Image 1 (tube, helix red, strand yellow):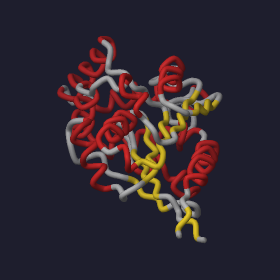
Image 2 (cartoon, rainbow, N blue to C red; image 1 turned 90 degrees about the vertical axis):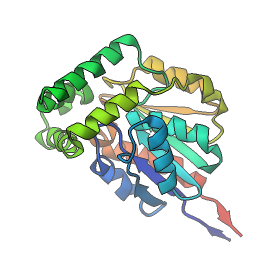
Image 3 (tube, helix red, strand yellow; image 1 turned 135 degrees about the horizontal axis):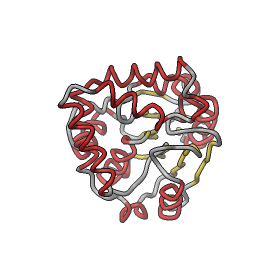
Length: 240
């Protein structure tokens, strides 16, 4: 009896590229068929979800970060039978509140004023743990991913995030295994939001990384990879 490798699809979040998952892709290569999906082909969460589903194999495990978690919830609503599991890193299920929408609107105004670099500089202290902010390699990676994303795509991502639906009332419908990965010092997603998802998603588990910010896969690459390996390996199916 043979055991197949599960397909694992990594999905970057806002202002991120495939390079955010390099350590985890490498760590899972021997136990899974891995790919990084492109979430840059549409301008709404619903549209991005359709485009990502078109890139995915018939069944897969999705690993999503931040904004990509919003896309994951939409994908789960559309084609839940294709999911063998979902690992959601530093995300949340609620729609924007008024202060979040105001912050994003300000970002759009800064983009229009040609001040994209100031947005990147402002975000780095928010997305990284204080101990990581002096790591020049890490901060350069975050900055380079943002520059590679570019102003037009960032604006489209921001509008998509602002227009997303509230996913909390559908969390109880999720039937695939789910692991939530969250850094204790995440400046984007709160512990209360993780606990809310944990309570609502049947059988979900929460892995908390201490001394870690929003970019856990860059700040704690080995720990995140270990969590994902432990999550993915039991999902392999026996082939007759």
